[in-house]
Image 1 (cartoon, one colour):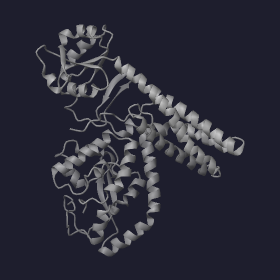
Image 2 (cartoon, rainbow, N blue to C red):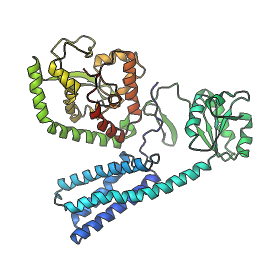
Image 3 (tube, one colour):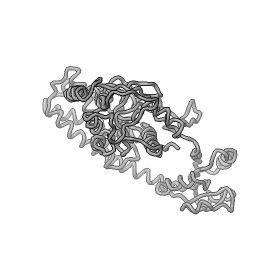
Image 4 (tube, one colour):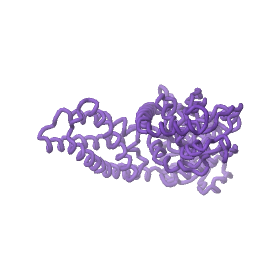
Length: 462
């Protein structure tokens, strides 16, 4: 079973986003005007351009990082504002250099960078307080019941318990009280539903029944149309393998996306990810070029053979790509199934052991990222023969190719690096890869990149 998203990373820009954004960016632009006039005596054209770029660029940047998402608290919200502000400033400064405005006053930019975050925090805190208070009042008046007492009803009850006043479960039959064992009280059955809604002033009814009860669900919905209650159907899809699932509309027709690539579900965020990946890969190749030269010489001297090893692996949507690595083994004939390196493997050279242990052998994959074949963060690409071996042994194994493979990933920072000598170990790695796809966001990528250096010296890498 694929790990399903509890909080789909859908970048909706609703009223909450626009209210926070309007207050924050207005304050930031007014602050820029004040600082520039204080320093220079007038608002020069180059600073007008910076204000315009800030206004236009803040929407995609803050949206991609989900800066004003309602489920984040004060601390995490402020941290996301800081991250968004840093990214936005980097873009603004890059624009100023490329457009010939590199001579902007350093003091102005320094003050604007610092106080810009301060004024954004000052607008965020009271607006978040008001939004949280309003949402709490709405929840307190949303007395709810759940129809059903199966696993999906119990799971829903657990997640709603601290969010809304939940009275309990309504079962299909009078003698069915199995739901009480899950910790949520059974308060009645279907024949008592109308009376229960009226007597307890219920404002929302959740229908948590499987698809086999569709006829009953339809009749329940029609019967409750005159009760002035919200009716929410939470379908039981636990028997299906879902990937990056979401609910939307197609020309006013409700649609459940059971399996969707992030390229189509979050096109703007994916474009931002690809742009950032290629830019960082280019800078990384430049910065690490001295290390490249040293490692290339060491590999060449360690044993006869080429410096680089290019192995066919599956990329995005299963396309075959050639993954670049520094050669860490002696040249040998590969069997039908690629053999993973093991502890004290005689094929690994002394230099190869070091660069594998420190993951330096993976650095050439920045070339794959620059070519658009890989990402900095994503499921690690496995050898084609490994994919063929595991594809019919692990459920949804090949679904990990619904996103670009990466140099590092959620599985790698979770301790699932190195040899996977058992099916169980590979299942754990695949589960983490699918969990990454289901919860993908630019913010998650950033956290994985920050944590990666602390996992490089694992004892299980050889």
